Structure formats: structure tokens, C-alpha cells
Image (tube, rainbow, N blue to C red):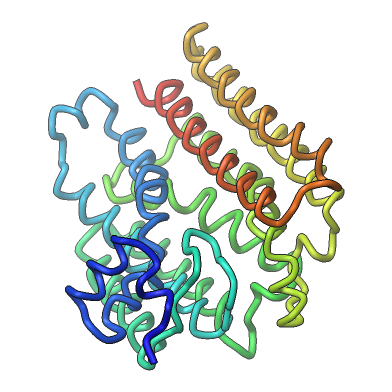
Length: 309
């Protein structure tokens, strides 16, 4: 019997014609809808290292393409596919609505992708290969029993705030071979509390799914009200670190304005969400998550112009 998720939209129908059977399901479980924002956040570190103008003029674009591709497709995509093997989701999940049934060889496929990425990472500077290896281990501990730290509230938070938040832009910086300086180090560390604020937002709309599986996620432990308060507090801490980095770099008023606009974007999402939280449906919470994702993208642009010119 054909999985109804295969025919959900034109993109999926075309994909399953190109890769028949369960072939396109392997691609979907890599969550390609996340790739653009993941690639942008990774590439940010490379541009901060080489400078925006040299990057636009083609400075080492082959290195950037390899570093970003391995991080986004092999490491991040492989990790998300690995999650799908063990999560057994039935409803919408992050970056994938109406997920198809996990195909039979998804475990081998996801592990193979992670391993291939690690092997190719050694073509880049050792610091890049090292941070890839660290996140590879974190991915296994996060997704795979008996550890499965994604179901352990607090541990899942720490893994994600460092893995996606700080290590992702640092990996692309490391691919350039340039030592990390204090100002840019502060800017990258600031993404750690920023993702700490973002992470509970990825779980709020999945309360029912997580309860059904018995997963004790951070957002379930905290509850709706406290999850949103933690998100607001962590975002404010992140922008305090961005402000310290801007002060140390003698940023111009235009750069300060960019950081302020990014902070305003987060508060525009989070404050109304907090006020209306009790009356919101899961679908509305999901839309809040995607609005926060847009605020993240604005923050990447603001940091680029504040510290990459």
C-alpha cells in the first residue's frame, strides 16, 4: 500500500517519480527544508573568517562549499535521519510535515552519511575534522539508544545549544585555518544561549507526540509558560554577548542598529507568543516556531554585518 505522504504535494510526487519506491523517503528524512537556514548559519563562520568582500569576490569558495556541504548534508542531515529511525513520529516534525514512513535501510543510510562526512572532513584543516568528530559523537549519543539523550531533558538542551548554536559557525571558521580571535569567539559563543532559547520552541508544538512516546523533553518538563520565559531569558543573554563583542570591536552605529533590529525581531515573536500561549493550538505553536526560525535568520545577517565587514 502506498504511503499517502508520498503524494502530499507536487514536490513529493516528482521526487517519488525520480526515486521510486521508498527512494525519495531517504531524501525527505534528511529534512532538506532545513538546509538553507542551516547552510546560512554554517557559512556565516566562513565569511566572518575571510571577510564579506573577499568572500563575494570568490575567496576559497571551493573550501567553503565542501565545509558547508559536509556539515549540512552529511552531519546535520544524517543526524536528523538517524532521529527518524528511532522516533517513530506520526505527526509533523521539525522541517518535515506529514513524514513518510522511515524506509527499511534508513539506519544504515544515515550512519553511512555521517561516516562519509567524517572521512571527507579530513581533507580540511584538523580543527574542522575535530569539531565534526565531536558533533558526530554527540549526534549518536543524542539519537541512539541506550543513551538517546534527546529524550533526557537538559542533556538534549546542552547538546543542541553547543552543536547547532556555537560549533556550527565555528566549524566553517575552522575550515579556513584562521585562529579564532576574542571578538569573533564571543559572537559565536553568543549563538549558544541563542539556541538555548530557540530549542524549547522546537518542542512546544510536539507535546502530544512526545507524551505518547514517553520522552521527557525539556519543554515538557518546564511546561509551556516556563519554556517561553526561558526562551526570552536566553535570547536576552545571547544579545548581551553580541553587545559585548560589538563593544570590543568598536562597532559603528549601523552595526549596533543591525544587532538591535535582530533583538527586536526575537521579542516581536516571543512576547506575543508568551501572552497568548494558553489559547494557542499546536498548529499556532508550530507557526511560532517557524517565526522564531525567521528571527534566527535575521540574527545571522545582523552578525554578518556587525562582525564580518
